[in-house]
Image 1: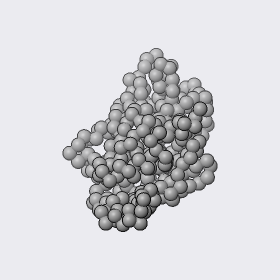
Image 2: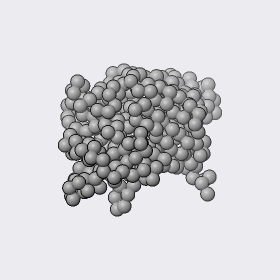
Image 3: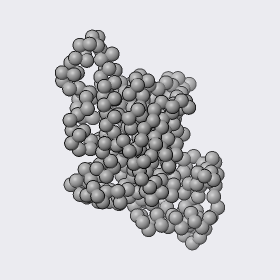
Image 4: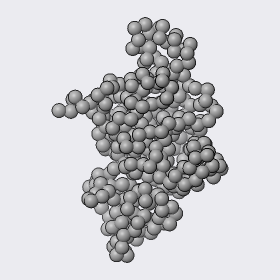
Length: 329
């Protein structure tokens, strides 16, 4: 199934999506029509995820009954989970790491009074290089779960940044709570897959990288975490490591990659995160950027008004526009 959160009153609605016919089905409305009662599992996407297999089976039953559907074009999609209970983003693609760190050094050096000296200093101190730890375990950081945006939503450029970038990522929502999850059982804990654009204020990110604590202002601005357009349940995806990924800006292809290129897979990340720590149903895990999936890798960044489209095979397209606040008047 494809499951989306749709804007509604007095609260967002959880809907099944049928892109092939351009329709959606309000699952709670369908349940009320069939039984006269509300289903707790359809109160929100988080509630549906937490309901586990019984909730998903109920959603399938409602979808198969063929209740009244609405035109997909007539509704406003929100992020599938507008405020995830937790967000973590991995660093799972080696090609991106190699290319992005090399270009980040170039970008930082270009802003120094003596670029050659700055580059030499960074190389001597190991700044902005692929860390040795990348090859030892799947690295990740925790994101600002309150800075989520959905499909077709404008992302406002933070005033402190001059260099805005996109990141083409693949992501999962956890469906089953667990701790010390073995790698071989990890995939069974995935509820579904979605697309993630980890918008980045690159100049802020590069400036704070030397502190060694990971991204902050470079990633945490309002709306920076774009997710969507919906969640595709794990059973519909099939092999998650055989999917093409493409990014376009204003209709022009800027890069493409493949989920099979992941050095670390979601199973590795789930096992690592849950080692001694409870990983809960509804948590979000990003893959990190696929190789060729961001402007940093080409030193080609975004401009005011650019429309970014991220496409992942079998999921769909996540589209957002970036705007500079001073040019919005």
